[in-house]
Length: 419
Figure 1 (cartoon, rainbow, N blue to C red):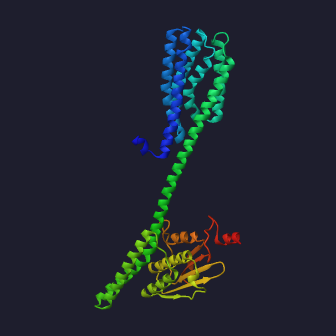
Figure 2 (cartoon, one colour):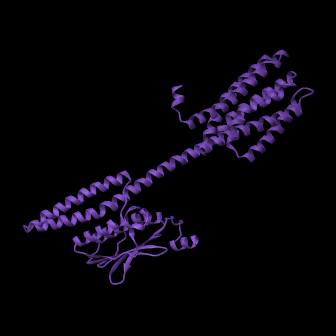
């Protein structure tokens, strides 16, 4: 009972379905044995023949049970089964039916012979129905019914139930194939749904890991660059005996503490970038690095933008600032925010650009991560060299309620579709 309760609901359904199929198999074996022990005994059939038929029924049940177990596993997993696997069950079923036909030839089994043959076929059909396609299965059933009906007509005594045999075998084969195949099909669909749910859960974990890595890169990238810059400046000032070195190290400590707080926010999933704060932060950080930063007056109130739009553009400002500090030899930087009826456009442009080397960063980091963020709010990102050795980053997002871009489409195409 404890083992049953510890199973998942799907595992319980699997066990119940398999148990039902096995019950049908062994129930058919029991029916075959009981039919052999009734009318043939009363009509004094040869004892050796009846004993052989009973033993054949039991052996056939064991072989077909193993065959059915293999067939069910192969059907659920989609693996193939060698043809030799069916050799034993098919042979034992043939021997059993031959012994039953021999009994029908020695004593009058007119009302029971069709039932005997039908119950004898149930065990092997249970596995056979799962290994071949339905159309092929139907052809096998027709051939099987024809062969057994002809055998009854030839071997049985006068008044052999030929029509009853054909109808009984037709009913048994159709019932077994339909019930077992449908039951196993439902079970396979349930397992596939469970596997899909497991894959979905793993994808969710992978996406969360990518989000976490992207956020850590965006949060720490600029701060670490500023810390390295200020630490280098403090070292130079200390080497000259200047008192400003202590001020720079105090600033390094402040930025490090701020980074700790932001990392905790990333871990909790609450990290959002504020556009106005990021613009002010970018200007201050670049100024500290000796880069003149001009932030143009926005053409609309930034506070009126939705939080998601502000956050997405704020991350663009942060990443662009980090790249300016890390790459090139910038002396001037211009940041503008323009708002139209269709777009909020953020432009970050700096001089002193150097040729861009191919980067093998992981997806979700740097500019790739920004594109993911902007796509989530229906935006686009352009980044590349500009005239006069400059580098330009342009981000566009809709000012209203964001709508993700259709996969493979452009922002202009999506706006035309919504118009």
